[in-house]
Length: 394
Image 1 (cartoon, rainbow, N blue to C red):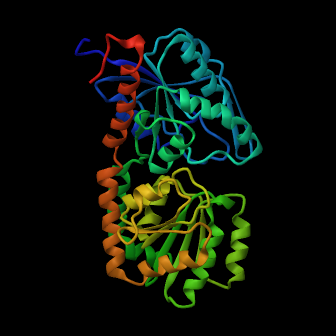
Image 2 (cartoon, helix red, strand yellow):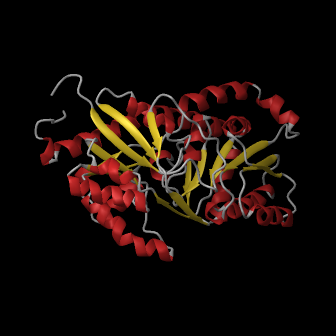
Image 3 (cartoon, helix red, strand yellow):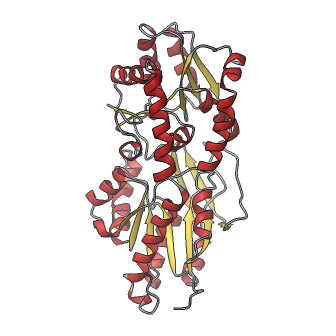
């Protein structure tokens, strides 16, 4: 195989997401990879983030339709059919397998003998009626893909439970643009006291949540925990950053508790979010169900201790009890309050845990480690495919 040889990789992804740009740029910069990303759509209705189009990787938008019904999203992009059948790619990576586009790409890749890698964040079988009907299809894809890329331990364990062999599972941790968050946070942290004064919260310790205001995020449990905290802990404030269908319900709950230090600031773009992370002392993700929780990555880049639940897919890989935060029982407001109290009332511990968060994110959840996970899965798939006897990778 020539020194300049590159494997042509097609990667099918749902929409343009700012969190995936560092992954695609890193893959495109790898000496063995010639990447093309195929997007099923530009965005989804529930997403408010800015569509970031980078010139550092090759991509194309597939024509087709997207069916959106509440949280049910289904892509149908027939464009992918000739792309797979022409066999111009050495390997196909599919982001999940829950819609027509990824399912037909899987089947056609099998038909023409192109190795296929499943990129999956799944941590459990879907509970809804449609999800239960689709589970056998997804299990089949898991068991018949050449390799599987997962973001962490919980997702790896789920894939093994449904039949995948350990040796074909590769971890490529979910990442954000670490350099951006770390640099911006360092700038805003210098202005922390001035910003807090402008917000009229000087002298207060700040707890922050960032995310969609939907029931599965467990924000109601955080509000109850905060209410308990205020009975014994003074000078604390809770900032809730995000929008969603239950915002008014959560606001009513916070008013019922008669707490005047809960602030709903709405949706913020990436530039504004960094400012809020930077004035905070602790980040809380009280989720009832999250395949990962990329806001935890962001908060750790900003040097914050983390409190989250067992239901966060990132929990066991990113949060270490007593080291950079705590993992608590899902839906337990009392345990959540106790964990927050341990950190917020001890400035020395709070500072130590925040520094540890930053160290973990820099060393274990960066672009290089993520890209290496993808490349390892690609190498394994190529080496285990009879069609590539003369193109073995080492």
